[in-house]
Length: 126
Image 1 (spheres, rainbow, N blue to C red):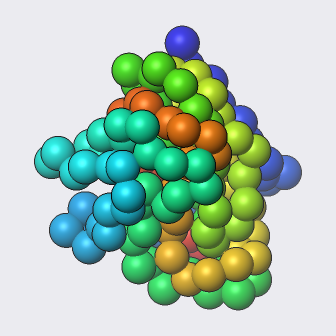
Image 2: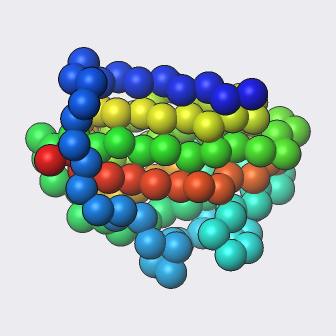
């Protein structure tokens, strides 16, 4: 199942280079990094499972894409550089919004969570 959520009003937007770098990922409680995949196993509620220092700038628009697979339970949302809706299923999710908080890419669980995340991407709209 592929699910895409776009909050951009401008189709045809141009985005810059990839900002997420797996070598810079900070992995949180209940998560493990395996290559470029984050495995979340019974992560406690409201925990950042991934932080990536991207230097997000106020007022800039960012596109965040990630895939959830092997979903068992819990929820995942973007906690930085903006807040997104929560996702609770397998699929590929895309969010486009203006930076409102923090300079990191932060993925946060809600509820005790077990699933895997891959194909994580964040790009700034040019």
